[in-house]
Length: 362
Image (cartoon, rainbow, N blue to C red; front, side, top):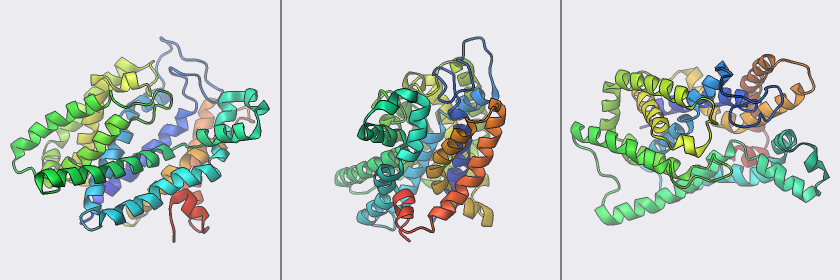
């Protein structure tokens, strides 16, 4: 049975991700702003809405999506074979994040590289520029790449688990056992956040994202766990707010994407409380759909894939205009939420292109 609240968590989170990237390319906290407009941040400059929003969502929203993906993978594998499962993941995740990036990635990549590398790259040979542009154009597809690798790992883990205990997943029988798991899972996520973090492109946090996915598959997919999260949803929401305020207070001024910050206890406590609160709230109130939410669920993944190129194109056009950063925020947000779904609908009509970019065959 399809869990509707999972679809609703997914599309709501992607809306937050899109809004995050409206601000991201102007971020000047802890790094040099990719696009001109904001001077370098210094301690004592004060907080801004854009800054607070980025700190308020970045630690947890991708970890949440991996947990959701793990739960979804469990339910998928209840009615599909491992071969069917990985075939679907190959089409939806691997093809767009490899072939699609190789063919089309240079377009957004050239904007990113041009903004960050400047004129120095223009003198480089063509093949060097193509490599730089393509790597810079991966954008949101890092999620697809990681999710495909972790999906392959899941099939191996399932085989090992089946060989050891003769059943795919041990069911949690008692509510008291759920509380033990709730404590254990925090320490698993916190410990994993310190492992397998890539040094340059810090999006690839293999440790915590793999553990989040597996916890989604083996723990969050169990009805008894969700019932406990529903029961304590207001407490977990309060804990999420308090831990979030503390994280922002403690971390503001340090680049929010550094693994050294994201591996702290307070960053992981905020992340974990948000995951528990969102699962509890959506399972209680968001396990329903209508025509609008069903459409949002269908369009959410194409929007996730395409929103960064749309934002970058809008930003590149705005760089020729003498506009305030605030005005650019508004225009870019409008472009992201209007033109990204339109771009997705258009690409879905074009054979081959829709497969390379969105993983849609028909």
